[in-house]
Amino acid sequence: MHNFNYHRASDVAGAAALLKDVDDGKLLAGGMTLLPTLKNRLAAPSDLIDLAGVSDLKGISIEGDEVVIRAMTPHAVVAASHEVATAIPALAALAGGIGDPAVRHRGTIGGSVANADPAADYPAAIVGLNATVVTNQRSIAADDFFLGLFETALRPGEIITSVRFKNPSRAHYLKFRHPASGYAVVGIMVAQYASGVRVAVTGAGPSVFRVSAMEAALDKSFTPKSIADIAVSADQLMGDIHCSAEYRAHIVKVYARRAVEALTA
Amino acid sequence: MLYDVQMTVNGQAVSGKVEARTLLAQFIREHLRLTGTHVGCDTTQCGCCVVHVDGVAMKSCTMLAVQAEGKAITTIEGLAAEDGTLHPMQQAFRDHHGLQCGFCTPGMVMMGVDIARRLPGADEKTVRHQLEGNICRCTGYQGIVEAIIDGSAKINAVRS
Image (tube, rainbow over all chains, first blue to last red; front, side, top):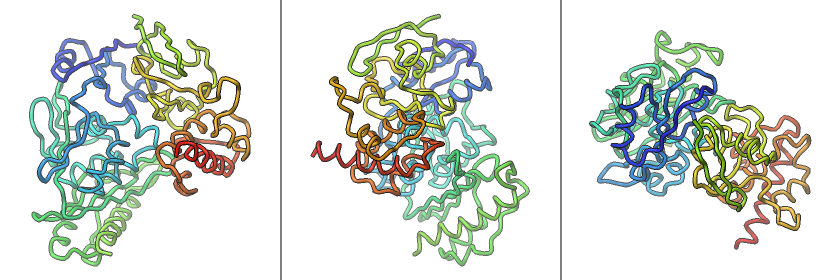
């Protein structure tokens, strides 16, 4: 790991100011991706600005029909939250399946969402549960947030402060877990709202995406049978040492059906 | 540039001067010379470096020493009583032969204590899932799982 300067921010405004001042600064949340990246020398920022001491970036609250999770809340806290488990059990289950217990104790929702790893779990929750990503500058709708491989709508200097999830009438997250890393080879969030069904897929493509053909079919009839024959094209999906794009396309189809089965059983 | 860090390790106040990039695992092993905390993979996967930070299991190879400023750290050296009596989880590992070469054992024991705290009465399946971030290449895990179930029962019997 190349060396860097370390700063401890005490509030979001201070962190934003530091980020602007330094040469090539990076925000440090839980560090579960950033520190391994630095160890591999895949990045060499001049400065790290630690957000751990910013107290108003932690905690979970229920506001109307939304679950609000502040950016520095660790996965383990989301997984163990009674409020989350009551409002959106699929979200608690998703958080409880990230990485391993020690990683969940440090990794944060804000860090995961900002990093936009194609195989991360949270992007499926953000898009599937029609969340709003709130930053120190604005609110960004889920469908506008993820732009591509490790690419988001965040501007330089923009800091995620919270994520607001809309409570669905029902939702289920199903993940084909990579047995060694715990990352999603394919992860699917199926969520039903009064306004329609959302099907979001992580792990399969370079970025999370929705399957509109499945959403339309489930809007008409929320049954496993209604999507059993809807295939996803492998053209835009990822093929790598773990499995081919065609295999991922197949898993999307099978897991979407199983997620609906779990919700209708 | 060096940074001053202060923390409590196994109940003792400690301080040191570290580079920003110094990992907590390095600080514990090389500055404090507490070499019970092992570094197996250095990539957040194997769990040999698990310590407790404010009572919660974390991988000390993926945390900077400066991030532990003001925290209370417990390492494997901090579990046994001063007279040498083993912690119930250590004793359970001994009783169930939950180790072979011993390299992963400090992390396994620290994670076992964490499992006992969070999930009292956890069954075999739960314990196996909870060990996803702790890798053992010798034992096949059977003795480790049995040790954690037994150790957890003894720890929680004392608590209740």
